Length: 432
Image (cartoon, rainbow, N blue to C red; front, side, top):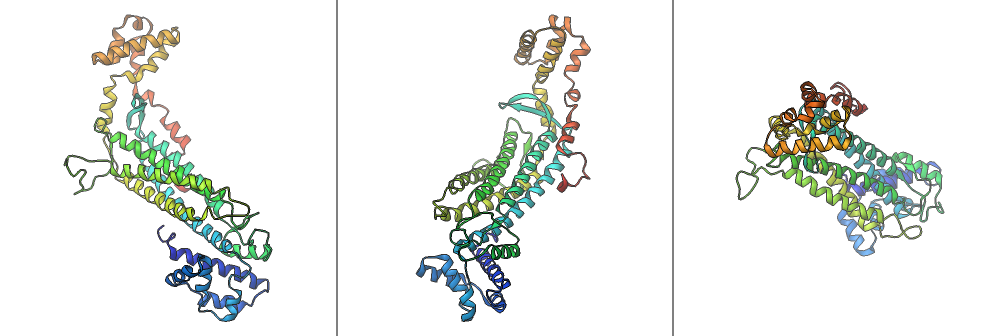
């Protein structure tokens, strides 16, 4: 990803676009074909030389054109950048960079999906406590949590693929987009060579809603990764201790406290996700440009597009490393379920009492009172219920026992996995 967003690679793409435009003019007979051949063979750009010229002329594309043509014949120099405006080159080349970056990101999303798929199946039936508001709620399975993340990453994949399509457009339509000194035919030939589609309507630039959609896809993806990392951080807390991010041999967690094993990778993902989201705002603000263009988008894009893409790629890779080495404490998960003293079954118990004729308020008040008694007394709710006269009048011991059946509570896990598209390890992740 660093290579894609390097200055050298960007200039290569500028030159690639210039050659495609030249070749289009040659195909319609406007310039000699030997000019195209000469440019392909001899045109090159030395970045140091280009910067020297840019210091003089104050314009990067003019400096690029001057540098690229220094080794060309006079005849070839005549036609280089013929009929093109700066952003025919810059914006079209940017589309090439965004498309290539999208492909890298999409590849990493697929790799992340494959890991989540594996984790979901591995821990499909591993029970753990679900939590709402940070408090014990009802049991889920660890595989269910990974399945949730898997389906969210599938949506991120769809968003990224759509964003790739939206940015895979170019323009060679001139200074204000009406082909005053070019032609749609030249544009179509040039962009076909580059593998891009012509924007149906453009001004001097491609419209920035395209780039904002690309940034939005990155921002949502980063937010998902922050969500996953935050959950792992929470489950690594000293009073929970159900998951732990990898901690390498020789690694140290604190300069002062040798016992510490801090979730630093998760925290790094969360920190950088906030930066990526922050870059979305200027991308949105770049959409309203004056007239057929102004430069208010340009300087900011040179920061936000490379940075957001590189950072998103980085935290995707780090999250994959985290998943690969994730430590799971299954016994601790069982202990935390036991710590609820069976109060996780309160809703099931309430519903069974409703089935026996109590109103919802009556059943709720009764189960709440018994649950509080269990928690305050440190006794299992099942035992409290079995001792309660009113409950025993309505439910048999067998019916009460069934309310606390964990397997029964988790009976729809297979169905949920089928809906998520996670059915067996042989299925091709790329087709899901």
